[in-house]
Length: 174
Image (cartoon, rainbow, N blue to C red; front, side, top):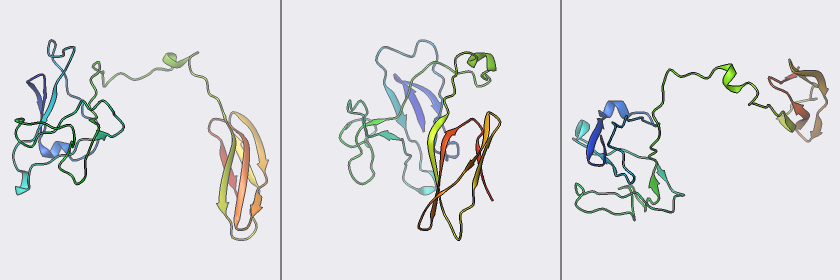
């Protein structure tokens, strides 16, 4: 698959590089990015004798319809169906243009100090199917007091209502 931006080929992926779903980052050289951009994906060859194909994720909620599909080497394009798959595939391909990222950049604690506020979850319910009597629960956390949690029984289900979940809380059942 060849990725082009504004008519310039930027990256060619072999089929073996595209086996896993996910995001792929393609560096954009200076001067190629414009105010309005045309990103093109082009399949080449016939791997393993199968017809050419690859899948691009489609944002089916996008109403702007800025993506097109061509099965004729770009001679004609359509926004009405973005894939040869059965049924109309409408929306936009998930292509994002953004600033370069440094893969070695790792957040440091000082990046978050004074900016990150942990708000404990409240009124959490843990529901378990029981066989026989349900045990008492013990909620433990390094950030809060240990608590004994008695379950509410409804048929074969025990519900443990936890008033507040601190960081690293664990509900222990024995």
